[in-house]
Length: 448
Ligand code: ZN
Image (cartoon, rainbow, N blue to C red; front, side, top):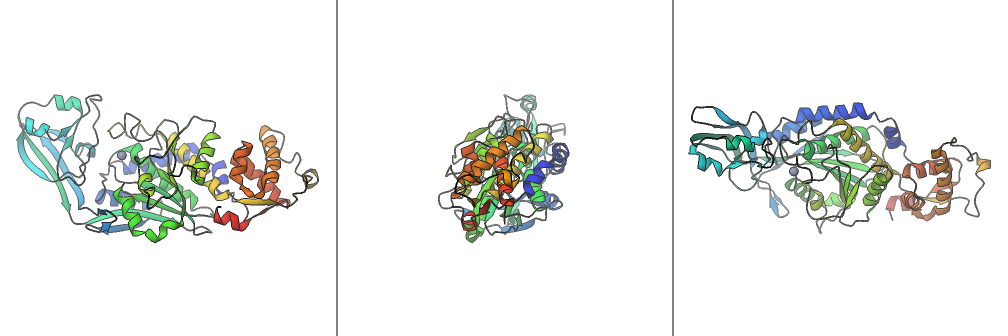
């Protein structure tokens, strides 16, 4: 099987600017749709993603029991507004789908300002932003608006109208399975339930779609499973319906908030020292850029479902600024200007670099373990040019030879040598080529 250079070649030829713009373009197409945990907004979004990646779209009927939860009624919205007594729309869903509390029940009545205010949400600290609010499972309705507009509302009668339906239907999610050499899987999951919000989480959907597109272009050792699911109820549903598949998942990442200008943040898996944790930390450490690492906590995105004690999968979350830590979070300011092509592309590249580690993190044996083998006679001295990288690869040759005793995989060696995984991998490739290194197949597969 040897080493897989498919991902490293993708990274080497990575045209950040072009890829970033393509990712942003897909986000722009998805932005106007009113997504929620169920409904046509999710279906339309998955259809758009299907043009880039052949998704299998699943429908799970209302009332289906999934662990401790039940698939709710499906929510769809066509229009909504609040009109003042002159008939002017003071709040209009057509201007922004954030104006309606997501999952609002239908309503049509005329009420006083005081009654209306019980159903209005705004952000006094950011008077020009519209907050994002949701009312899943609570049978209520509401509108969100700029605080400046709320303050300008006069004491008069208002017509409130929400043309929505909440009735038996389905929960919809998308899945893409990419078959590798092994049945062992890497899971990438993103949530597809937020309306016009970019970093949280159109950025995750777009990154996941592009990962699928790029990974499907190269041979892979692992199989990959990509999930586009509504948060919480979606991951619970997927796990409940795929219980027998869960044991195949070896590593995973939850993709969210990957397009803002902040530095990368990695939230570790519940275990904290899983291979995915070490791979991500290694890539971030050797990126030369600032980054943060957080321990696991039972808050955040769907990593908390995948890490519930009965499931306990080695799944972390690689974001830029994590949820709730940027002021634009869950507001209309999390928009197409806030998320930039450059950062989307950078996040995609980092995800690919992590998968390059996982694809190639194998155990090897030194075939000449009695003293140092002679590298010169095998053409390995001065074979990598004269630069700094060449010196690192030459150092890596000795690290790989010394620690390829069947007990250390390439990531162990890279960490111990404090060298980038890519350098250690290049050294290992060169040693394989001259017959000084051979793979310990059984151990590489079992991930001991
Ligand atoms: Zn959110």
